[in-house]
Length: 111
Length: 144
Image (cartoon, each protein chain N blue to C red):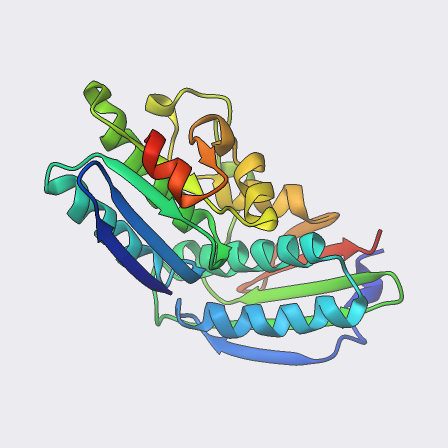
């Protein structure tokens, strides 16, 4: 897994690449916590180059979403979600909990 | 029908019960699903089910990384892929794992139980057994 983190004025963009499994989820979780601990709660996750996500990765997303939505101060949104990963998000009931945008520009503009 | 799988299974692999093994296990499983000719989505679902099962072995059967091996066997049939995972950790009882609250609002979403839920949803047959100190998980994915 690789993570690219870009800080914009209104949000943080996190591009996660490769495999997000139990081996890499702690690093991803840590990155998201680092962002929310710095007082930033609008996060766009770009999944365009994500090949695989397991429930360990999904748990990191849910934890971040809980922190960001508290007091309506922000949210985590997803973009460029590959079809297979979308199926996993659907099955987990995550598509009701995360807005999904077709591209980074619309995600950054709307988060 | 599960019993008939037990004898003729090939090939067999052993991995250290560590999270870094998951990527190697995944590429092995991907090759098997491609050989069978599963669709991209079906292949992904098998990869995910196996990943979740191996994570459960490390976390629950062994209680952490580096406490034992994961044994993997698979067989490609004309219309199905049969995967058997074994470990020598604590007995795993799937009935003790509560299913996730998929419809719960964000605040009440629990963080566990998703892995097992994926295994049952993605695979066509799933059977857990414990005998003589060995957990055996048999999973079957049929080609549609």
